[in-house]
Every structure is written in C-alpha cells, then in structure tokens.
Image 1 (cartoon, rainbow, N blue to C red):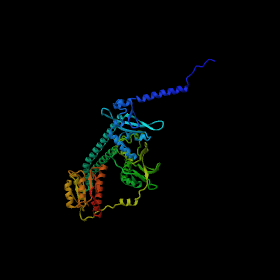
Image 2 (spheres, rainbow, N blue to C red):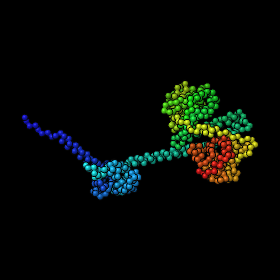
Image 3 (cartoon, rainbow, N blue to C red):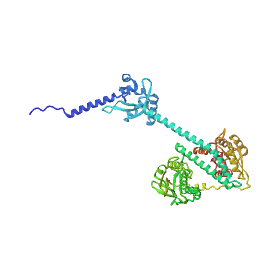
Image 4 (tube, rainbow, N blue to C red):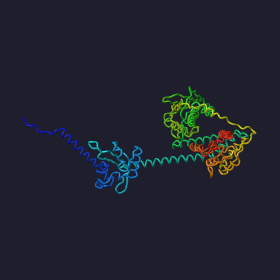
Length: 559
C-alpha cells in the first residue's frame, strides 16, 4: 500500500486558530482608541495603559506605568465623596483614593461609577468607569482592570434636555401667571357690572319690562364672560400642572342631587324633561368633590343646551369592571357624526355650532376631559345622528368615609337672619377700588342690622379695626402698600383685633392663591365678581361666628 500523506490533527488546528483569534481579539481591545483600558497591580499602581487611555487622558504609557494610580487622574473631591458614600452604605471605614475606587471590586462585585477624569493638561471630562478585580488560578488578587469611556456627549444631551425642560416650565409658569393676572384684571370691572346689575334687577321700584329685558341681557352676557374667564383659567392651570385636586370619598347620590338642583331650572325653561335614576345602594367615588360637580354640570348643561325642543335628558349610574361606576348622561339631541366625534375634545372647536343660537367657547369639554383624567377617571361618548348622544364618565369606587353623620350635620348649618330693629353690627371693608366699595355699600344697605365702614388702604383699615372693633372685616387682597394678606397677619397679631373674622374679597381666583389665603388665616374667601346671595351667606356665617365664644380661637399666632 502506498504511504498515506500525514494530515495535521483537526483538533490541533482548531486550537491554534482559536489562540490566534484570541490574540487578535486581545490586541484589538488593547489598541482600541475608543476605550481607556488601565490595569493595575494589587496595590493599585498602573501596569498597563492602552492607546485609548493615552488618547483620552493625554499621558504616554511610560509616564504613568509603575508611577501613579488611576485615582491620581480623577477629581479628588469626587473620589473623597465616593469613599464617604461607600463608608455610609457598607458601614465600613474606607480611605479616599484608589481604595475607594476598588473596594467593591476587591470583594468580588463588579462596580460601575461616574467620575470626572483629569487630563495631563488639567482639563477634565465626565467618564463612566467599570472596575473588575483580576485573580490568578488560585483566586488570589493580582490587580484591577479599569475600562472607561468618555461620557461628555451624554452629559451634554442631558444638560440640554434639562435646560429645555426648565425653559418649558418657566414658559408654562409665565403663561399661567399671565392668565391669572388677566383673570384678576377682567374680574375687577366685571364685579361692578354684575354687582350693580343684580342690585338694579332686585331694587325698588322694580324695573320696567323694557329695563328688565336690558338687565337680563347684561347679566346673561356678564355671567357668560365670567364662565369663559374661569374655563380659560382652568385650562391654563391644568396644562401647566399647577391645578391641585383632592382625592376623597364623595357621595355620588349627594353630588347628583346638587347637580340636579342647579340645572333643573334651565331644563324647565327650555321644555326639557329630566330623569335621574335612583342608585340601588349608596356609592362613593374617589374624586375632588368640587371638580366632579363641575364635570357633571358641564355634561348636563350641554345635554340641555344642545337638545331638541321637548326633548329629554336621562342620567343613570351603572357598575363597571375594575371597581368603577359609570355615570351616563343621555340626551335626545341631533347626535354627532363620526367626523364630529373625532373633533369633540379639541380646544375652541364648537363642531359647527359657531353660527347657531347657543353661546359657547369650545373649552368646556376639553377642561372636563382633563379634569376626569386627573381624578383617575375615564370619559367617553357614544352618538347616533338623529337619535342623540350619551356622554359617560367612569370614576373609581371607594369606601364610605367613617364620619358620615358628623359630616352631614356640619353641612346643615342654618342661615342666621337678623330681625328688623336688632342692634347694628359693624362691618369694615378694606378696598381701594371705589366701584367695588360702592357695590358692597349698596348690598349691605339692604340690611338694617348692618353698618359698613370703608377704608381705602390697609393702614387706614388696620386703624379703623382697632378703633371701631367691627364684628367682621372684608379685605381685598391686592391693596396698595400693605397687601391684604399682610394686613390680616398684623390684625391677627394684635390682641385687640385677633378675634375678628376676616373674609378675603378678591378677583384672584387661582386655587393655589385661595388655598394660601385660607392657610394664612382668613375666615372665608369670596371671589369677584360677587354673587350677592353667596356674599350675604358668608357674611351671616362670619357674624354668627363672631357672636360665639369660637371667635376666641382666632387669637392664635399669625401664620
């Protein structure tokens, strides 16, 4: 047989090829210009300094090998801070320097951290560094491997994003502040328009039919303008994230009863029938009570306003999945097309109703949707052209509050009516706007048991309060010189006036301003334009409070 030529062992070839590849891989890593690779001995002295480290840090390898530690090229303050952080985290004393950088790695834990590298020329850059312990075949520690990468680009992007976020927040805040300021400026003249119109409407002698029609138009336009101001302010607060909402157990039956009382008169005037289905059992939802009423009243008013003559509105509540209750408002109006449904929650879009006889802004449903979502609820609509629409809101159910009885009693506060011929009570009104002062004078003049004192600024008002000792003080917030809040604090700090309840009377309607004023110590807060009935009720409550021993509770230290 002829000799068979010798062939190399396949396994040996594979092993040799793998070793060559491993060598090539190792060489590629060590010569990579994109990563700094530094190896040290067990004491932390640099033994290997690759091309990437030279490029990033500006040192030649022969300038650092066997001479310095990696921590010598880090920001010393950051290294010290890291040592302190590790000491607190692990409850172990750790010395600053390379020991702090290598502590976790020496205990078998790979560590990645962000620190600032200092180049040879003194410049610096942020870096991400991974450090791993190196061990021999006997698991003895022989050194550390540090792999670092330049983090400048990511840090720059983060900084730009943060700056953009701050700029956006400042712009939002400026917009909200501007709208809040404009709301105040608009409310001040509107207060006079609506206030005097209400007085003329209910005055003696009664207005003639022609005058009555004119007054009705003034009041209708004024209240509509006030609604528009409120809606724009609400939308601005929601979009800026500054609208504060409470999450409390709210009785669905009570809220629906209150909403029904508020809309039934309008439905009756338009010939619209209303049906509110009874709840099978008491239900409580987690919501902000005031905002939930705002949502439901808006849906009810829309169902009445855009209904047909002789139509009907039906409200039903049904349990849905995931511990929620659905409140549905069904109307018999013209219904909505598919295109209109797609545009329904767009701001200022009235779905072609601009030329109709109904007033509107196209903001109400936008505010309604966002309020529902902020309260953790859902909102939707189903509609059939020619048949009608169903707007529904789903709110999360919650347990009933523990103090239902005491809460119900607290809400049933009787209104005190002073009989004719009773001793006069002095009310002090601190207000720099003559029209506002005159309006309140005319309102108070209808009560023979009340006497009004006026003061044009806080300094005079404080002196009047000390001298005349009024039962109640009405205080404008935006006063020249000393603000209403500061004046209230001065009166609260004086033992001779600390017991007097003070009602804020202001065009500032932003919820956070109202909350701050109440937290500062005001007895009540009434926004302008004044609603006469609401104003008199608040005044009666303050007078009743002033006649009881509870008034002494106001003598606490000022906020």
